[in-house]
Amino acid sequence: GLNPKVVKYCVEKGILITPGCANPSDVEQAIENGLEVVKFFPAEQAGGLAYIKAIAAPYVGMKFMPTGGINPKNVKDYLAYDRILACGGSWMVKSELVKAGEFDKIRELVKEAVEIVKESRGK
Image (cartoon, rainbow, N blue to C red; front, side, top):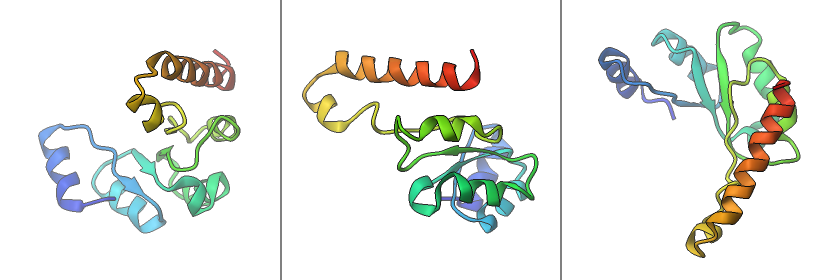
């Protein structure tokens, strides 16, 4: 979420902060505090990329980092939108893989995600 006191403190101290926003009021508060990037959560549950585009339209300087429901099937669509700075996805580091110590599998999933980003961003 976006706690105005925490955001203000971080901005004053030069601490990077990316608060969670889920509606235009949250984005307004972020802008009021001088922020240019916000986390958008829960992305898919709140309406997905279409909702982010609708929210982003009047806030031309704002970038978004969506999380929540992002997966290998939809991440390319998010990354194709120029106002998306990055995406988060728990599919890369599933708790059961961590608990089982399957770090090779996690490494492969992260590698696949990096390739998706490179492909989506033309790099």
